[in-house]
Length: 120
Ligand code: SF4
Image (cartoon, rainbow, N blue to C red; front, side, top):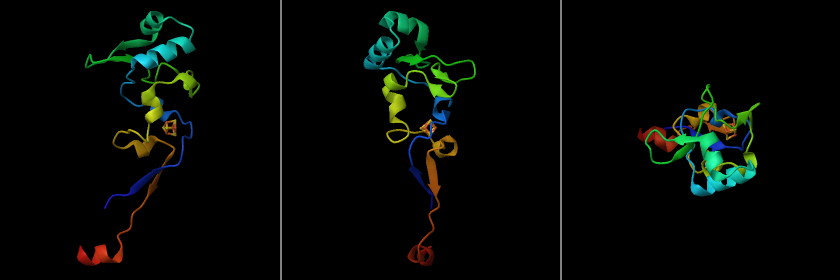
């Protein structure tokens, strides 16, 4: 029986901004981020994006240490305009093992009840 994982709220640890993987951008993300940074959309695309490995979308560039390009001093520099994908973690989507590095995750051990033990 697997343990239960609960999300108690973002603790601002920044770990989800450092995990391996793409932050895919939709058209609305690009428009919002460009406006927030006071750039034109082509300027934003040139400076902050690259083509995903699967070539299906634009994604945010990473820093050399794999952190998101917008992570600075453990804070998101574009928090109020962040991509939809970032806002969806971890309640709308997450990756296997997320509870090991997300400081907002609480693992609740599940103990089998008497009936389950008896029938095992
Ligand atoms: S890993 Fe979890 S607690 Fe840390 S910043 Fe991301 S959502 Fe918040």
